[in-house]
Image (cartoon, rainbow, N blue to C red; front, side, top):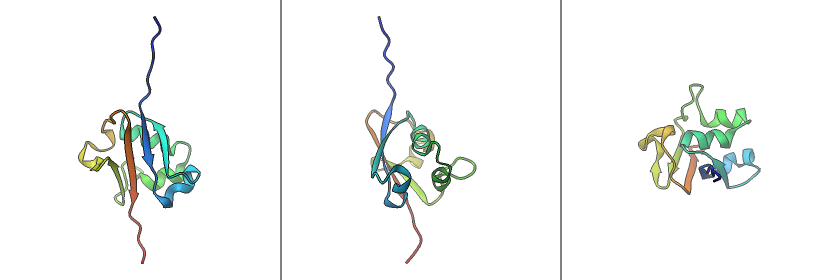
Length: 98
């Protein structure tokens, strides 16, 4: 009998100001069972991208919001919130300007 390993995946919707880090795509499918794992996969190998989303302590920056469906992940357990099958995360970045 063979064993099948399933890797959890999530779709991450990327805001326009950050699409340059993902080849201009508006969404990317990444592996991850938690929000943290999915965002780590999204920013893997791209320190400047990671620095735009996370503090030096590894927490989301205050101006970065991530939603699982309509729910802010900070209210669902933060970065360690589990992702259900077929999860879609939306990254939103508040920009200053006028």
